[in-house]
Image 1 (cartoon, rainbow, N blue to C red):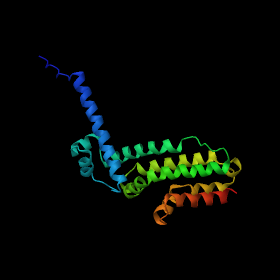
Image 2 (tube, rainbow, N blue to C red):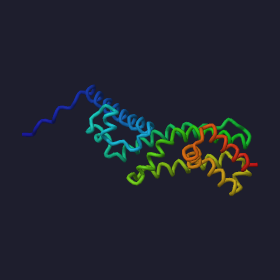
Image 3 (cartoon, rainbow, N blue to C red):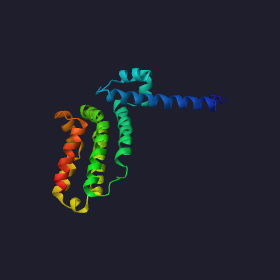
Image 4 (tube, rainbow, N blue to C red):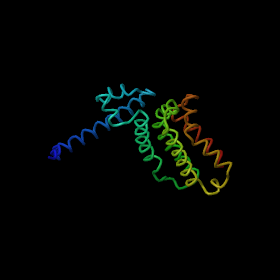
Length: 198
């Protein structure tokens, strides 16, 4: 005598569970992003669960470990940043395009800054965060080479100098270590870029 198959949930019930699961996952990621934006560099799973208003078991039902949650957060922030850096430039002249790149990167780097600090603190425990950042650096370099005037892009000294000037590391030093405002940091980079291109 064969045993009867267990009853399957009604489609509406299954859909409701799936929606709740997706909602919980999104709330967990949003909580993690909010906490890191608020300068909580390495929030614990317990703190994330409390912020998302879910149980600790729910966090680990959706994420195998904190590294996978960091990965999901990094992917969400990368999507936000790509919207900014992938937009076509409006300026038509070479130097003006570089100035526009600086303004655009300033916006992206300000969004990225707390997450970059978190990744620096957590990188020794994460196999993902260093790879994510390396991919972004490569993308930024490709955009720079594409948008520079050809004669500047072909000059290795100018290209490497501009790549450094327009990097996150340069931005972080001006903002965090030298204490400049966003406008002051942009002005410094614009002045240096114009001198390098000239």
